[in-house]
Length: 134
Image (cartoon, rainbow, N blue to C red; front, side, top):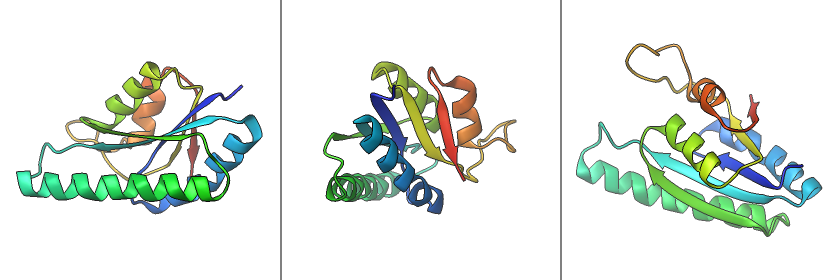
């Protein structure tokens, strides 16, 4: 049923709330878990972007190790750059994801979508079901 899970992660509290659910679904359905972190470097200086890349790579390593430590062995990490909701949906389509599990976030989108979160935009664009964890 949920052969491939996509878990977009960042350093938010909501990501940590979603992690146990991702682990539970992955164990129950023997799912392949794809961790994804996306950097939108549009407003960052080159130095800030490089620091963000390093932080993201560390975050992905920690998350992968954490999932493997609790018994989830089928874990792969993806790092991409671009507009976060679009990249999440593109990766879901590209990897033929069965379910996206993500935390609800207070991140707003710019230009006319100030009240819309990344999770709302992903729900609108996603090629597969999306489970949003508060």
